[in-house]
Length: 404
Picture 1 (cartoon, helix red, strand yellow):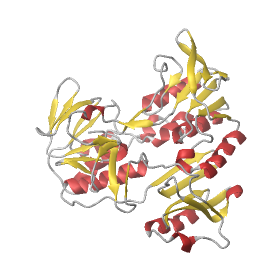
Picture 2: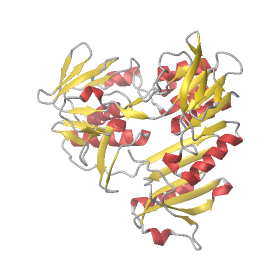
Picture 3: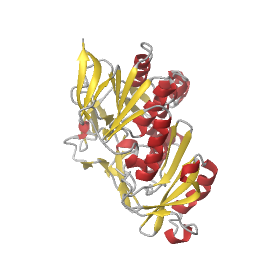
Picture 4: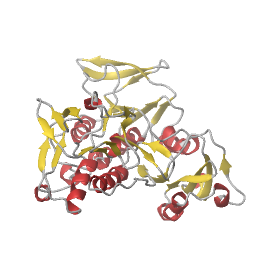
């Protein structure tokens, strides 16, 4: 259930492993499966058209020999009867179910009815936002939220030479993902590229004229003109349809280490919360690579492998001329140490230490060095053994947890 990266990958993997039984792939969007990360990058910028982000051609989907139900949403799950209920009351029986319904973007009160206010989750969202950004010259853009999505939307708008203001209640952008010190560099990068930063505040209300947004009032009293508003304030697991199913629903579909939520029911991708044995904690990840790897692991487990899924997470983002990549996790009380380069030099790798072990590494324009240092996270290397001499270390409590 879910036909984005995780759902499609699970189906393809099962066929690749020799499963030749009945297979149904159900997705809420009318489009065939596509890759989401380019939505806030190449699609929004207009350098790619939608055909380029398709995950499979129509011929390849046909070769999958699956029943394809696109444009269909689930409204309920009966685990006792092993049946998914779709909109319209249609029931789809299953022997094994993979839940891969992803997340639903959060919005702001009073925003949904206004023209010019956009979320950015689907292909249709990206195309509508792109058209609005090109609607007229000198469009003024307000981006509410300074995480991955908001930051990438701001980058795309600035590359169109538009006036951009970024608004976030935290003191620096991407603080939750990177912690204060690295996030401060991201904020400096946005400012250097012409973004007006309004950190430490939020949106109090929208101004409108004729049903279209014209501006914002912030919680600090600031008034902003805005022709286009991008709301990028995070997302919640798409689990509303699972109410009453008997599944454990906390921060997503709660699974064991094998990604199993109940007999015959598994979850993969953004919606799945599972125990990662490598790090000894529960996590839910909204990263492209995890969606693929977790779906592959789930497919193997559906077919009887029953092996724990314990990856080293990977994510990346492009912010102007900065290519930022990271492996691992980033607990709130981790220490931070520079292992390569200098923070002010535009090329560096930092490590994150937690409870005496290396739990994460992050590279800024340093892909080769980062790949070499990834093994420290895989090996859970002792923190003291990797520190440079003399060490450049910042104590914990400057980071915000990136686990969900």
